[in-house]
Image 1: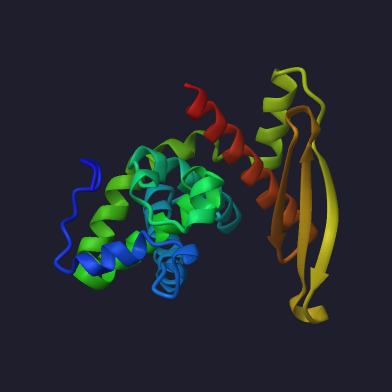
Image 2: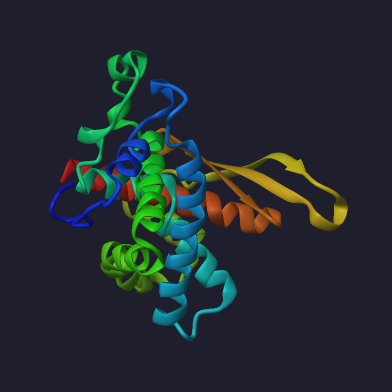
Amino acid sequence: MPAKLTYQFGNPALRERALSHRSTGADNNERLEFFGDALVNLLVAEMLFEQYPKADEGELTRLRSHLVSEPALAALARELEIGDQLHLGSGELKSGGFRRDSILADAFEALVAAIYLDGGWDACRALVRDLFGERVAGAGANTGKDAKTRLQELLQGRGLALPVYALVATAGADHAKVFDVECDVSGLMLKTIGRGASRRAAEQVAASAALSQIEATQADAG
């Protein structure tokens, strides 16, 4: 693995599975990705809880959504050069799957799960805390403003049209309904989807995802 991911696997087969996209066959990383998603969310939540003792639940949720969004994890995977190590089927190779955010983010989460299974909780926790330490610390620069406000200010600063939010779906019983909201940033030809227990919460998640994609694009350009 690259220098930034220094963990050495006792069972290399776990690493290979984590890097194997479903296009390669049955022995792929989908189950590991499912587990890794939960681990990353838990460990980043722990870090945010420690770092921001005055932040309320809503602020912590928005920060976590931003830090573990698909674009944010894909950007981290690129830093670790995970794309160069992926095992992809011929179709995904031809279509540039090693550059796709969804594939990179899933592989990162799968690697986290593989490290947990190979080295245990302490090894997994240490790795995630090392990789996310600066990101968690930097996320606090905007704890006083929610994602919608920050996105609006960013677009205004660039002289672009404000985002438009639209409810695209609802699901669940009345007492446990979930809402899917689309955030359309027409000035950047960007659309994201957010899900939440209320329309307002879903709008915040969609705005946070848009911010993550904009920041990831800026990082790639830099």
